[in-house]
Image (cartoon, rainbow, N blue to C red; front, side, top):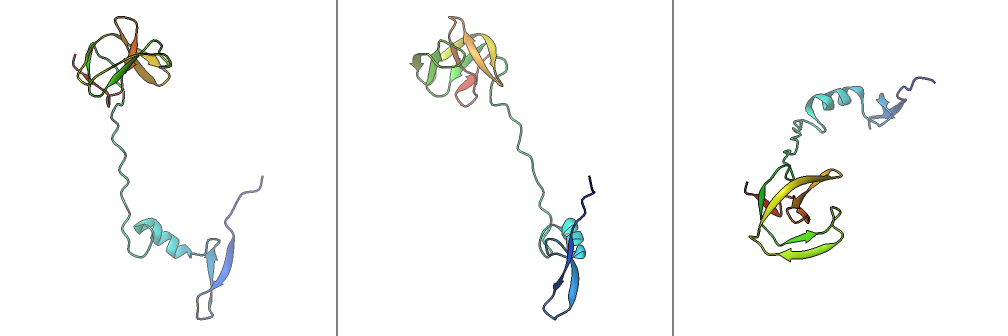
Length: 124
């Protein structure tokens, strides 16, 4: 396989003078300057801040409190609804079960609720 190299061509800069340019129409000098300072004339580079990595699901809990209305389910896939409970309901957790990349909370009676921290608050 042949090595891939950038294609150069000549462009004119308004005065009729031609300058050698990269295939995207900017000079090597401009490209080097943009690498140092960011895109545009004199624009400082922007710092990319990563999103904070906070857990969306509880990994361990013995007791949780509902922060929104919560539905109990018969299966870990959340296909068979059982009953919906109001805000403030406290649930005792038997164990935390993994389903794919998320976790579910298994109750003492064999039913499941979400472990999403938007809907439940860990008490114990």
